[in-house]
Length: 105
Length: 180
Image 1 (cartoon, each protein chain N blue to C red):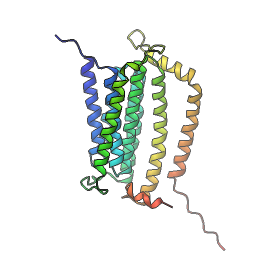
Image 2: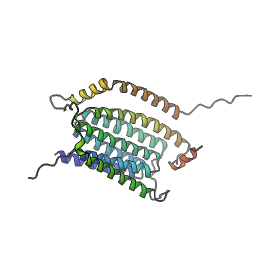
Image 3: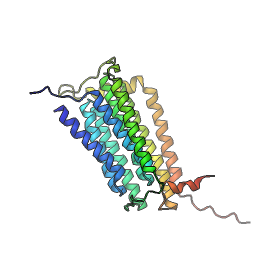
Image 4: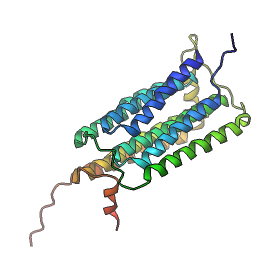
């Protein structure tokens, strides 16, 4: 039997890079503000994954502490972001990110 | 076994993330996001972050995605949008190229600095059957010890977010016209 392949630190980091890039493409491509917001959550999750990976690689719990704070900030961000989206969409239900250019002064 | 868990969880996360970007119905995109979050939670468990995996499921998959679905249903935007139309010509090609460049750049950075990650921390205490709370205990010592100030400031952040949202989303009562 061949030696058992174990996933190394690099595997996790590359996976997190791919997840981040998918989220990034989503923010650039999608028009629906809600879906763009979900893509931002995707990018936050990719970063969380790399934080946890580094916590294990460096044997330092600080990485996991950082993820904890990222989770709190993400929750606050979602609250405010959805509040803004609700107040915009209440006025124009078909609003996309393009329509928000009317906010220009 | 480790490899199997990694591949399965990575596939979950990747399929979900592609789903968020490609599904044309916002509700389906939110469901794909749940799949990604579960996949990442499995990877957290695999790397010994048991508490964060639980919080990920409860806060993200439980609270945040439900909030998303709630807003989608409240606003009635759960209609499929036509993704065939590309309002800005060439936007998708540029976005795809930028995404591929990002993956390439980060992968190159990871592979070239593989040996630079030093194991210089104080050590992670592993959760075992004998000490089921080892991970939570260590994380708590870090949050309430070294990072207690940041933790306290977090409460201010949450308070500001809540007050701001209430002000943003509230319909102002009609001011009675000042009678001349």
